[in-house]
Length: 164
Image 1 (cartoon, rainbow, N blue to C red):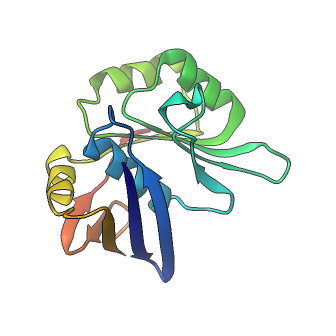
Image 2: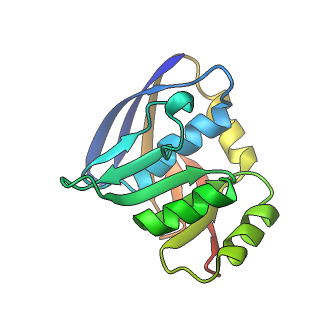
């Protein structure tokens, strides 16, 4: 299913067409969209989808093709996370699940200044998903501080888990 997101965020307007694979939950889709907008930089793109292999769900590339930012959702595999930390200038992981496994994985890789892990509330994502009544979604994202923002008046907190 294809969704169209019209998003106003920090004096920027985003008009995104985002595909939702039949096996993908709305929580996952909304997390991808939020990560894209909250970390947007030149060259930021969504992957070609679930069938894109080892491609990150959201990433940015330089004109030379080097990966600037690699954004993963939930718990990437150990090899994927190691590869991301080796090949990208910055690695961000968003999770709305229990982060224990993800934190263990991050600690097993060792200290890496490139890696940041955020946790989002699954309940808030469910409320955002319940408000979607058509395939066209309008959001206004207003930053409150570095960790919190409002999405259409709903408070969304990003808790930074790693590094602590």
